[in-house]
Amino acid sequence: MERYQPNEHFEITDEGSEAALSELWQTVEKEPDLAFVSEILVHFPGSRVALVGGIVRDGLLGLPCKDYDLVVEGIPSEENKTPITVLSDFLLSSGLGRANQVESRAYGVIKFTPNGSKEQIDIALPRTEKYEPGMMAKHAEVETDGVTLEEDFSRRDYTINALGMDMKTGELIDPYGGVEDLKNGIVRAVGDPKERFDEDPSRILRGLRFAAKFGFDIDPATEQAMKEQGGQILETFEVNGETKTRVASETIGKEFANSMKQDPATTIELYDRVGLLEKILPEVARLKGCEQSPSYHSEGDAFVHTMLVMKNLEKLSLESEFEEIVPTVPLSVKLAACFHDLGKPDTVFRDERGLHFYDHENLSTTITQQICSRLKLHMEKDLSETVSWLVQNHMRVINFDEMGLGKQKQLARDQRFPLLLLLSYADASSSLRPDGSVEVGYVKNALAKIHEVEEETVAGKPPVIITGNEIINIINNTLPNFDYKRQGTLIGKIKNEINDLYDSGTISTKEEALALAAKMIEKEL
Image (cartoon, rainbow, N blue to C red; front, top):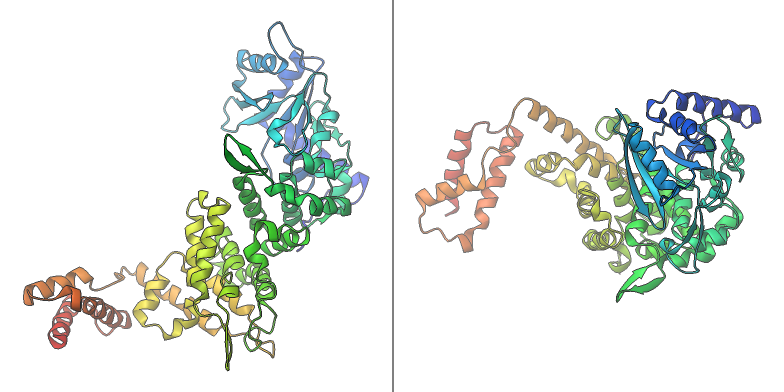
């Protein structure tokens, strides 16, 4: 995967990083949603306010970001009031916006919405956290009294996230060398990686996501700790009689999905490299060693093929035929590319003609639904349904040329059909014959059918000329004793044949369709 190219000012020099920081500072100074910060600095003279989190990292990389998080040091306590409450009360009484103090673990966070803005800004105090071994992060012992911004950064996950900008001076706060790691493209844990992952093993998943997103390398010590401690992600414990994993399924699924959005092939490679593939997605790991017929898959086993499909997706989507109908590759297609052959290990059949995987798409669909349920991927609207539909239908395009015209157009009218074609194109382009050639002609033919259907829709042509109910009405009027239980399939047969004639242009009016249906019923019965 190509590494993110930093903005033009962020060069591999101290001068370049200073220029990038200056540019970010100028942007922040002009941001109306952050104008209230100056009021905090005036009202609390001993305070320091830092912009923290992804916005500093992404700003230095030249990436867009407007997710503002602030940490405020030096807020005094007052009688019967904690520092966070003092700050919250000031923001409310000053009329600078709406402030809602939310308890999070043992500390407070202010959800602040500046006047005239719809954006919500998180404001917190610097804190340190001490974790009990093997416990979830919410059991951390939190300390906020006298904690500095620099000390706060010691609890961050990775050096590229342990960055801040002083909101008074514009100076960079970088106690752990995050800028240097950004320059060199390194994902490195803050301090001892084993301690960071013991505190919260979900950080392993976050690190893999950053590596996939930015195309960065993982620091060797950090990667070794990921390998050694990845098992903690699925460690179980009892809470009120209920078994839970140390990292919740929703979190695992969210991190996996977010990483797949960035680069699916790199995501699977990274999960495999640190030993998480067998733990989190054993169904994908089982594709390794699943032999395929060299006549159709000289590229290798089912795992090699799946990796190639994912790698080809983005590249093929940029071809002119797809660029218009699928401007960006959605997560559903990336997941379907990963899951489309999961049924192959359990459907392999060998005879004198070679290897076969009859109906593997059906089993692949069942396994896909199980994964989506386990990782709570169904919680994202329509995602699980679309992925399952793509997996279920990924073999249909191969037979597209043999379909009747009506069935072709019916499939082409489905809003998901362009996604299915892209998946099928990547699948076909990754199925190498012994001479390295591929067969993609059927995908191109199906693609042409989309444009034909679009033209008909624009022209106002109805998708069908006759319905099953209209055929039933003809039968009821002419054959009152018709046995629907014994001869019901006749209705679908007549409907499909007439609509095929309509799609081919042989008939064009409702009157012709009804008259033809009556003749066909009379002939059949």
